[in-house]
Length: 388
Image 1 (cartoon, rainbow, N blue to C red):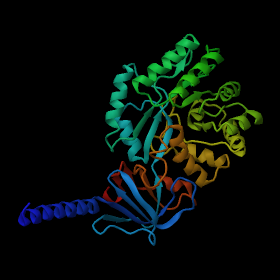
Image 2: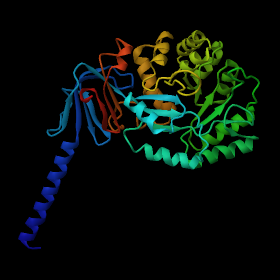
Image 3: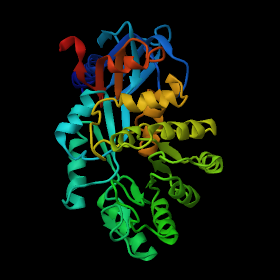
Image 4: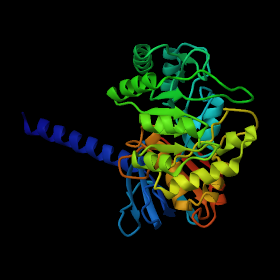
């Protein structure tokens, strides 16, 4: 190779490297001077720096620790708290672009649909989920597919034997659902005595799902069915019972690391005794139990909050959970029950940049969670109060 040609090749390489570096710096989004609560339970970081590159978090720390790229877009968020995007781990009717957009705009960047109510083919719905999950304007959708029960029971996917139950689990998973949902419900809205899964069918469902590395969420509303699902070994319980639960059941549930998503809102809307639900959560929490945020959006009559479900949060507080514990329930723990804790739920290097910025300090006043300053989803600013 001639010297002239070699010089030209090296010059091009250096130019490309320089352009790539400049693009990297220019593409970085940096939040400064807010207080970071990262969702892990660690102490808040004051006057923090948070750097986003593409859709990922690349650096989080104090301004003394983090060097800001020279050509980054820097946004001063003084007077705010920077949190992971919230996750509503129990909703319905989420296969709807408008609702997903409203959740995201309201600071809920992920929702877990706990039972499909559509009559469309499952594979078609999963393709739709995959498509909308590429758009940062919509909340990330995690789907439990169709809720499994027996004929005439509470749910839409009927099983008739342990063997059939295993097959139905595999069919759901092959279609692309993110987790499995089962029901142990005696009745609601005046109904009672509904047929229910046998213990053998429950065991078959859980075994089949766990063979595939998939979580199982269990629906109950009464203490006697909670006991059955805790003994069977589901991964989380959808709904805190509205009747009293024994200390022994809470102890076993906590020991097995089975999470609880209370959904006070739906009990309020049905006129059930919310005070008993709060008391039950208090007792579970006292046993060291883990809690996730969810309001059962669309799961009954009445109004449900599409943004951050403050009614749920305030009832958690009433049950004795601290603001930090409630934030963890709304982020990290909700990501765990959704099976996506390796991607979202905490503000850590390498995680997807789902970020909620609120004015004020929710550790001092939980109502500040409603003072949304900015929402970032998949690394994209989808709401900026300064631009509204």
